[in-house]
Length: 340
Image (cartoon, rainbow, N blue to C red; front, top):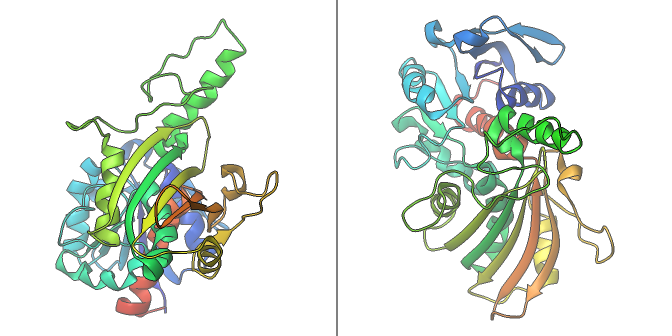
């Protein structure tokens, strides 16, 4: 016996990826519905060998459905997620709307699966920010061993994090570099993204950090440990898919780099590619389409008493969004709904 599953925002990058991953992981489904806004009504999306016709989110009745994977913006989520939840359908939301709500669990299954039981307060579970999700998968097993005091992270985030519009802008600007007759000014991003890097993701806050950087701080504390100090610099780079992060970790106890490497190799959701030779590390191209979060460049930081540096790469449309949502659904099914 399987579940009745709804994918909300099925025509977007993340929604399509959710459908792909549900099929790839053979999630137990008896019935599936693909929902979209009225402007995309009737569009076709793929689910394995099946073709689904999108239904109208505005008129859809969630009664009798088990799980709804939401991949739409916060504004639409605010309107429709409570309706789905009130109808008895558990919402797994990819927007930022509920991430900081104390009555909504923020889940990365490899890190804090037990927190999923808090879903019952609102019938909603939050999916974390893409840059946070891959980082905490790497941090958790190291934190369990040596207790993390402080994290300094610099991100190199792909344009797919800004949706199809971001990917189109990189593509169009790149072409325009070689065709001077065509001018593609910045629209999705604050400055030209082709052949450039932009040290701003989301809006600026009063203290000079951007909201993306604030998200990494707040979400890491909620998911892992409020005592961990985090400082982040988030940068958009001209890569289509795959977020990269240079992470510096300071621990309470000493952790040898070889032990750290062994711990990470044995931890769920991680793949260590760490050879001290040319090309002996992972880059975004290698991670695209993969479920794993790749870890490379593991080494001691001699500038602090108990420090480790590492490089972390992941497909942001997968672990940073769609995969994590489906993994949450799997935990929900195993621990709560128990149909499949």
